[in-house]
Image 1 (cartoon, rainbow, N blue to C red):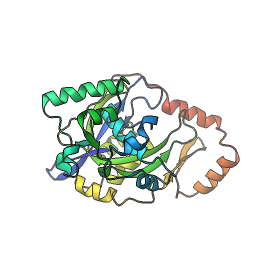
Image 2: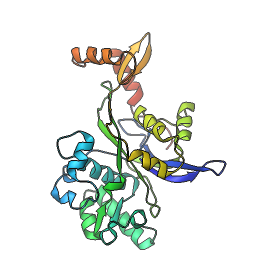
Image 3: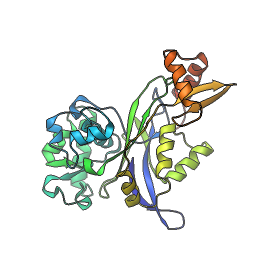
Image 4: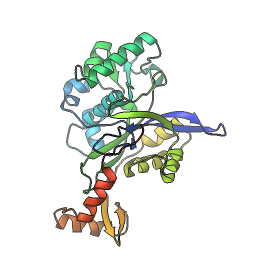
Length: 293
């Protein structure tokens, strides 16, 4: 989640979040608005990676995620995908390391902007890696300003399942976010409560984890407030929704809801066999769409 300071319709301080619309031809969640993201790749791991990160060791990252090792790779993957999908490089020059937020990479200079646009094309074309760019430009990744805030696992009815960690950080003021015109076809900056309202009205489509993460920050009025909260988030609970069809209606249960523990036990006992009614819901929910961009 990339956030920035903004103002509401009355001129009062507020927060906006960057969202990207998935391509309408995508096989999964076509046309839905999402945060930049993707999978952890092998090159996101290793001692050479840790040397290019500041403020968070692999041991610290792993402890935060509740994994034995390799946790820092999730932060690196988040930053890499942010650059690939939104064109935002969350880094600072090594010479400014430790100088604070004002030292984040600035691409307002047209020459610098063109250079990093070329880098982005090369990364998306698999001609170069994010860490190669860091070495060439003498950059370090600002993992210390990126905070882990939630963990969701896609329900069993989804045609593709994901074990997804969500992170949040403030967008560098000297960079412009933009979709890649491939996997994503539009970029918007929107106040969380406006995005939620538009989803409720049917104007845009959001997935349940996206809705939950937007709700977690809709009450804040500055990026400082959000980041102060995010820096203190610990003990993140894994959310694995259980989807049921009762009396022809879809019911989604999450940890803490009445009946969740019993539904989870039933699914585990059945070996997660997919009900035909749920399979139909999956096809209707996540299939490719047609329509204007």
